[in-house]
Amino acid sequence: MSKNFSLRSKNKQSLNFSLRSKNKQSLRPNGLKGFTLIELLVVIAIIGTLVAVLLPQLSNFNREQVLKNSASDLRSNIRKTQNNASSGLNCNSDGLSTSKWTIKFTKFSSDYIITATCSDGSQIPVSYFLPAGITISRIQLDSCILGNFSPRIPGVAKVIFSNISSAISYDVDGSLGCMPINNKALTTTLKDENTNTTKDVVIEKGGNVY
Image 1 (cartoon, rainbow, N blue to C red):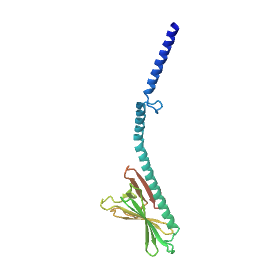
Image 2: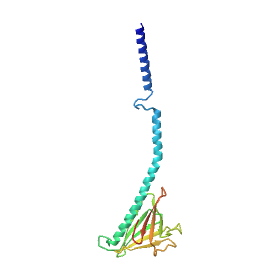
Image 3: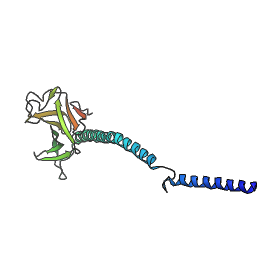
Image 4: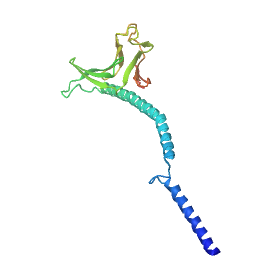
């Protein structure tokens, strides 16, 4: 009698434990491998916070790279123009020689123009466009900033490379008070309009570009 009672008690306890275990397991949705809805919401909230913090920084980094690459490309094109002048590169396939090469910068514009002037006076201009959002925000000839005297007249500067000798001279337009004589360097500032960051490109009269 006591033996039967003992067996019934053990069976009852075992059944109760089994039911509790099943009820406990049923509280977790199938397929989530032990994660509750609250735990998942916490993880999603953490991921969302990280994305919100890191995304603007990533965007700014990308824009900084675009500006840096734009300045690097400008320096490369300036050096290429120098090489074209010093090597006496012909104007066209007909063998017409060049008399000079010119790089034209205009304040507030999003491009610059490289022009080959041929020995017969004809010109071959090529425009180089900056990436979207990048503009020429400032042109400075030594200590004189072009275009500061009249907002309606944008400053225009030309860097002229003589053929063969590649001697550098400057010419300016729309810039009262800026004299292109005996100047040592022209600084062109590229600006990212989205982040207001800038990069300077300097052309020294001695030929250095940085």
